[in-house]
Amino acid sequence: MRQYYVYIMTNRSGTLYTGMTNDLRRRVWQHKHGTVPGFTHAYHIDRLLYYEVTTDVLSAIEREKQIKRWRRAKKVALVEQQNRDWHNLAADWFANEPPPGT
Image (cartoon, rainbow, N blue to C red):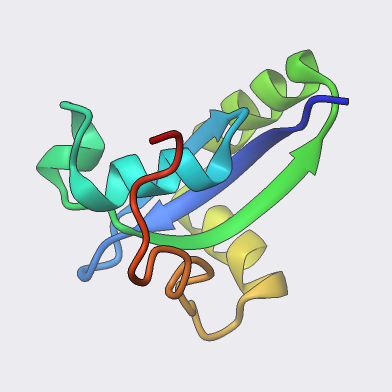
């Protein structure tokens, strides 16, 4: 069964970005390496703070929209429920390996 991920990422200065994907590893790699133009590239969003998994694409889309509507304080509280110290959850995902999907 296919999985969908709603995730929150950040950069060095703490800017938050919420997204949704069906391949979290690939998407984090894209953010980390700035391969997709836009907000995450411009703000160097490269650290995974939080993610949720579901098998329902419509639920994932709705959850992403819900979180994006929240104020920053509520997003921070969500992250800190599971990742109090804001560790990069993907810190060791790409050590000495090619990009996902290659």
